[in-house]
Length: 78
Image 1 (cartoon, one colour):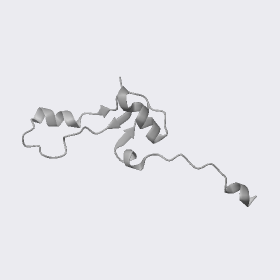
Image 2: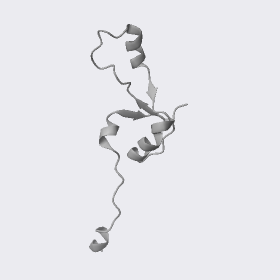
Image 3: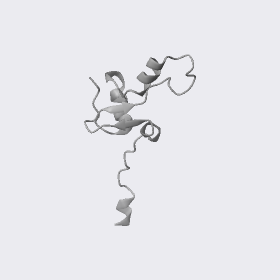
Image 4: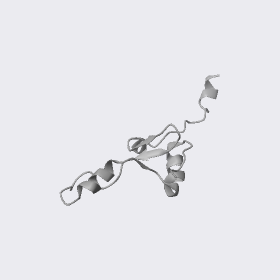
């Protein structure tokens, strides 16, 4: 019986680096942080900096790749 355990199928693992950078919402959308807002802010307007804090979702172009990395079914944003 112990021999059969050696041939169990391996587990599907999510991409750990991606998991640290995203959130999957209850509806299955993928929420991400906007780029370019982390540093070098002095020349950027307040309006632009506020726009970086708004929620941003992964679009149609990247959703298939993100889903494969997460081993989940995810939806693109509208």
